[in-house]
Image (cartoon, rainbow, N blue to C red; front, side, top):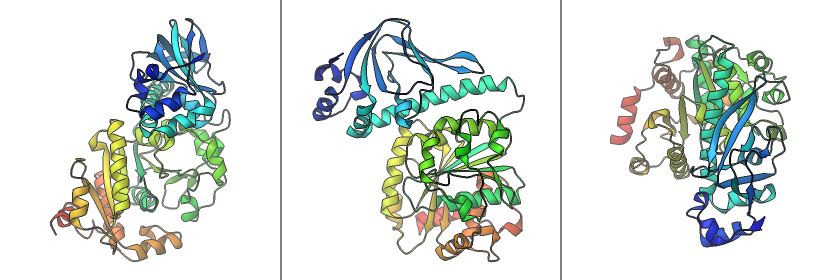
Length: 425
């Protein structure tokens, strides 16, 4: 394969908008070649060693489901997302599908050792690749679910709620844990809480729960075939919800990929009323897949400029992923704290994004900190705090059900009054 010229690279839609200097760097590592029809680029299970951009022709994407070949999709050179092979390189795992040329094809090839450089060159390239990856996983999940539904007549009814913050320290884990407790304890619903902060997740430790198996134990071959396999790794909390713990060691996180997550959620949707996912604070493949699987995305932020900027950038990414606005809920945590930005600053930050604050959780840092230090949730304290009342409000709005009076009152004010006071005070 011969190195491409800069002019040829400029014709590739994936690289549109890059600076001349970036194009020059790519030209040094990208090669082009011709592939005859009915040629296998790679097969499911192969080690990923290259990423491809299709400049001419059409390829077929397939995988084995229940022992049979299933065609997932086709990719054409005229498609906006006319590239493939990125997943194995992003996750450093074997190929998850087979790619065969349907016609004579021309491709650009980037070897694995140069792929990371491509992603670092420009965030727009990484975002375009991640957007295409998400769309393909949607199609993959839909095809797999159709095949699996033939052996089960149960409806998939769980609501999937993912808590995410693009910046650490927002308090999302504490909120997610309290929501899981409240729904299970006071609404008597079946709840699964997934700790998807794979490197440093500590929900089990935070709640004083003893763990024997974690999500890592579902990643070995043939370890994840049905809900019963997932069940072997769950820990039951005294309030009634089940927890799928994060790995015990940070290095174990590399074993878990988005395919595992999608299988877990697929198997568990028939078993629970609510699946709550607590993610890490990086907008990468795993967290994007969690967001994509969700009925509701809970974006958690603190009222300071760092969080405002991070949430604003995060909303830009979600726009590019075509998430509907009604799927996103913005939680303003620690409102009223001493470092809280003024009403004017907060109000103007999201004026053009058409996303409003759905929930306000007032600052009660001492009580929240004491609860974490004592391995308790807000509902296990004898004191009725503003924090606890705001969590009750959040749960009531999410589930459209009223919690009993023993759980706490519905906020210090109802949510609409709280938001109104915030903007008008």
